[in-house]
Length: 173
Image (cartoon, rainbow, N blue to C red; front, side, top):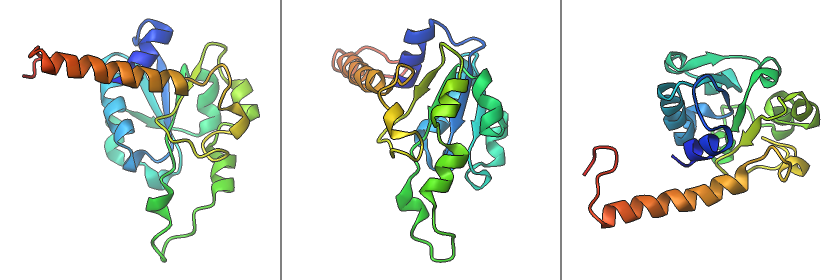
């Protein structure tokens, strides 16, 4: 909900917006709820990241593409936290290489400059600096991380107030 609030606050609508969800899609609750909600609201969803973190079931929401092809077309780049704790415990798996991930799927200065002028970058946090995003870009104009956190507080306050006052939330009691 807070991601939708942040996107709507910035663009004023969802219809026709192009949103790329990048990273560990299979392990992300954020990605799963956002892909469903964004498509229902009329946005076009795309995915990028390692193919081993992408399941065919996501095809109903959008398609998987190479990051550098997506960036110039996207209105929203939604970066997902690489969950190191999920990718470092299996001795049969290759060791996760943060530097290599950043080179292939992270937002660096070159990719940042290739983004649309009014595009935004979102991230559910916490951010792995120099993995999902170059550390010195965290406070750049396109990054909405602080706004997302603020909106998270406002959204939770509104939901709690609605529950405490006995109002219905989206048809739920």
